[in-house]
Image (cartoon, rainbow, N blue to C red; front, side, top):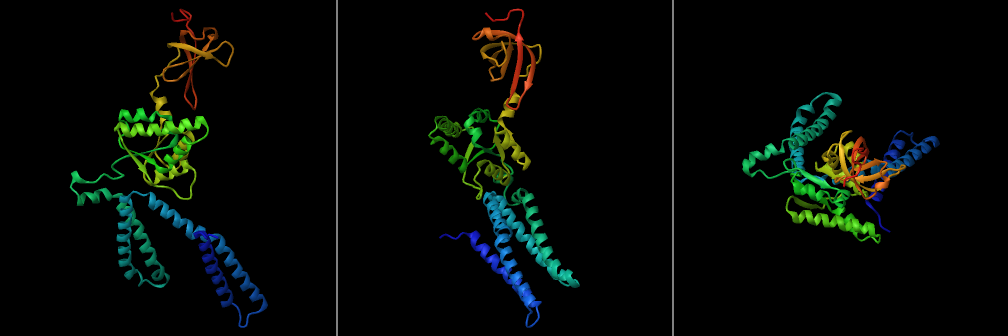
Length: 353
């Protein structure tokens, strides 16, 4: 039988709180204790045991694991700056304890500890804010190492890699920074590529090929990041936590992930939003040339597509399947996935010959 850290922490907490309950029960009982006092002491002991079993992981283990998780995902420079700031803050706090300990009553007992903790926190925050300025004191300006604050990092999620459009975006040079791909994203792509389903397997292979193309293209630096988020299984949750911890921009085309990341104040670049912004605007009354590819949902409608994939719904064009026609835009409808253009056949020539 394997015992986990959670088990040992619960047992330790139950022992400590159970002992505290027993101690106070016996301390405030008479000598010898009455029957009621014995029952009260027993209840305090059992209450301490129960609370220790239930609450100790939330008070000790989970905060500690969260601290380790944050430290593991934190860039080395930020971690070093936090440690230096804590040390400086504690030194200042210890120096303040001498005069503060001479204050009367409870102020002299508790204020030195509060002051030390407050100084440690302020020291870590201030040093993190000004870490690049402090580096400038030790390095010439031309030799200051590149840090997470001076070089933007872009975190890719699985959907945007499979999509493939990120290859062309990287080639344009708009992503001025380092592209980061977590190891758990690679594992998910590998899992998709090994799937028995043909469609899923094709998506996984396309994603792996896209990453290889970006690496070989030389237009951007690609880093495979080994940072993980223990305790989380969902890849989207891991991406949000990692992006927030390392101050990276998350690139995705998943609208749900986009919303979740924004709620947690993570900077997001959505490729679908970028594609919508770069599409040519169409105004009512404008003429277009489009080929009728398929039948529409409503009676006598035909459907065509622009070069950027925008759907064009043409009234009374079902009989012109396969023909290139001239149409006049009547209205443009914006949806969550893109635009739909509604048009009617141009009365002057109808079909392009």
